[in-house]
Image (cartoon, rainbow, N blue to C red; front, side, top):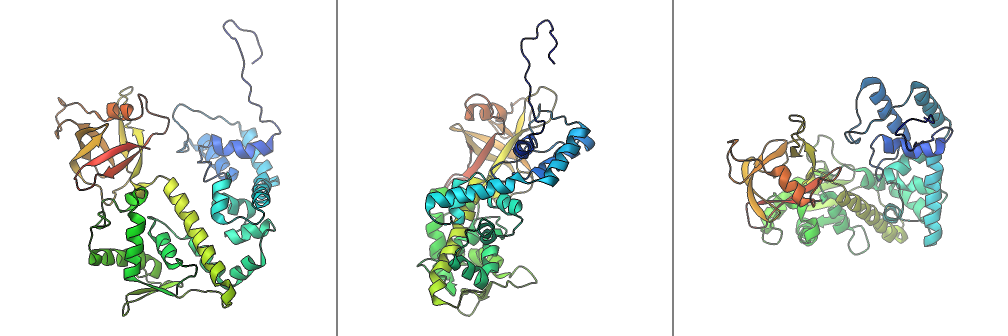
Length: 398
């Protein structure tokens, strides 16, 4: 590399030798991991190893980028990961820094807002399965937190880890904790009111776009009640599974969702219990709304893989998405009303008229470039929003 050669003006050297602490950060970056959600170096090394040995390129690595690691380097990195886990100390350091600034142990929502690590990364780094034990590993667990863990730790963990295809489960919990205590039950009418208020805010509308309750304020009470019984009540109570939920039950006689899970017997812990549930629910919602996904009608724009150099793109769904149309449908992009052809897994054609004729050009890529200011970014994403009271899907940049 240092030999003189005509036309060679400089040499760039990236030095990784012996720097295993930095390698824990660089490996996830090289493997294309989303560093806000996953900084696990072992998973990154596994992905890079598969790339080198099997040719399986990690999904997050952009086209045109190549990473070459010699077998001896892979072996050295694997050994260093087994010997030490600096990520553990980095997570602990961040916990102590935040606690020092706040003058107390942080809540989960505060942790997510002020640190570079997700809860998943913190749990993995510390070898624990819940937020309470993250705090315990950092020696920040208070007597109140210990009492809550002993009385209802499994439910608090369920709030942190339960599957979320939409935001609905957490909205239920916020409604049940309104007033500073965890209500033993909530009636369907109160749930409807809570959902109307939450999804009446524009920033939350995407989660009900294309559903029977899309017109949040105008939809009738009975429609809302039927919709909520299907989801989220059925999900929380386990009505759609053979195994009933250990935490919630549906009481049909009184039309109530009943909490049957553990709760502190000490009345002094009632308010801290509700605060702990609300903290976790709001943290889950923060994370949910910040991450793109089909439930928010946010999709990636990818090359179509057509003829070399054709430069065509499509909006990739990846699977059939409930609420999206099929076939030709009106779309709006850059203030223009055009026709998009919705397939099961993608929107790949936008034209001035709904025709398969090649004489009418596909304008999707050109309009996407305009949408993003002239050139598509490295990982473009768009949001599909159904315009209120109109059968038109608007394509917005994210």
